[in-house]
Amino acid sequence: MLPYEHRSHPVLPTARFLRRMASHAALAGGFLGLSLALGMWGYAHYEGMTMTDAFLNAAMILGGMGPVKTEGLSQGGKVFAGMYALYSGLAVIAVMGIMLAPVVHRILHRFHWPAE
Image 1: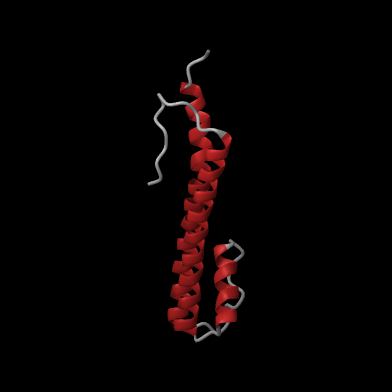
Image 2 (image 1 turned 60 degrees about the vertical axis):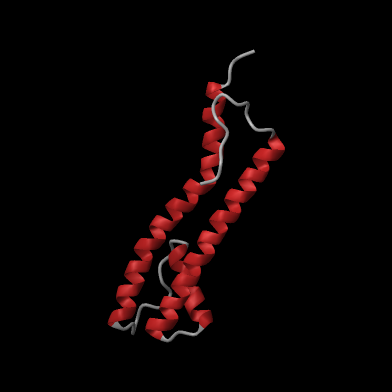
């Protein structure tokens, strides 16, 4: 877990907060990249798709649009597509949590900041 300041410490300066946001964005981007790679591998492995087609299908599911190719999928491919779609929904929620955590922490931290 990335370190956050205690409520007894002052709110981070803007420059450090922006660095924190950048580190969270990098973590979220890495998680999305791994999720996309997992989807590409599954489509290539179970359906024998080219990497371009596997990328298209995995990206569309990860983005919430649904698969491009659904006709002619094998049983394994259908199960993989369903499981990957369920995983993708949770992955999007996790990424939003990673990205919103510093903002929510900063807002809540201000509530504990002593008035001067």
